[in-house]
Image 1 (cartoon, rainbow, N blue to C red):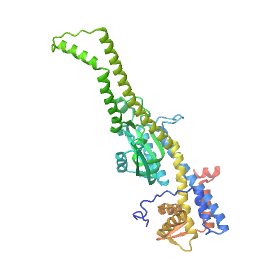
Image 2 (image 1 turned 90 degrees about the horizontal axis):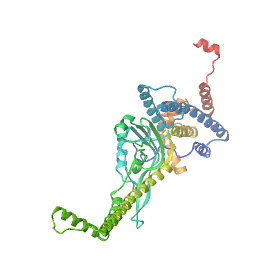
Image 3 (image 1 turned 45 degrees about the vertical axis):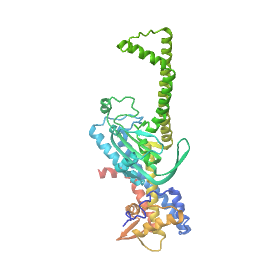
Image 4 (image 1 turned 30 degrees about the horizontal axis):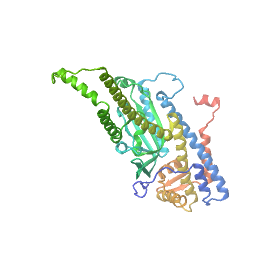
Length: 430
């Protein structure tokens, strides 16, 4: 039985942070295989990798077919119009197929609770964002490589440095389905940066949990209270000084005229040319002052928007159909690494292992020899080896085929992938 509830491994990631070619060499360099077996083991790895690649090729083609009617980046024409029923079925298959690939690539779903907590946390980039969730029909997040990191925040114009600890995700996949065009027409929302009714899929790297909201395509920069005060307080002081020095005489003149018109005073006020000139200059000065303050507000907002766009530019890894290929490649590697590691340690151990013993052996090997703590997916690994008939389970004991028999078994599976029948045989079969 796997130790999912063991507190010692709860903070470990399922992801194996080595390339599959490196894992092969790590097994070879473990010096527990003879020269002959090393060569045979490399051949086994080659055909195993080819089998996994062939199987995942069908999955990426399925994902592309399901995504075709929703892809906003498509440069090909659809062969026929999809009915709403067909679109719903394709969307359902897309979500299920994507979830299967992400699971194979050792991603974990970010729950709604985790997402709500992330949106409540203060952004590390000190940018306040607003996201209108009503624009979406469906939002799904996945992450891989959760870790705790430390950064130093600079405050008060560099006078104060504050160390913080935060949760970081090495990889984040976001799936968003937008509402249809009728919704945005009713909302009278113009200048949309996305296609209503479309579905976007994006892959990002190194995303702090507190900054997940910046990944939404409709996020809008909002000024924080402290940023507004930085602009408002100097503006208020400058405004008072300006009113007292530049507009004082003009305000008194206007006040006297209004008082005379309202009958509050009997003294008639004569407005001469120099008064009008002073009033015009004062109003011009006031207009220039207001324009300057509005420009400061806009410039600060533009500065925040640039910080946001610069940050996203370097964090974005792939988009839409490109994400499929990226994830498929990652899933292939993870599936291969899990299977070959399980088979290798069954091969080199002097005795049959139980499921728990094999799991602990792999995890201990990574930790002691490669300074890497992982939560090895023993169930997934054994499921693959059983499906290819490379191992069998006798209650809790695992029994494996030797290298020669394993090679013959994989070679037979590969040959069966491409069955050939002559024309007359096909005629008989029909």
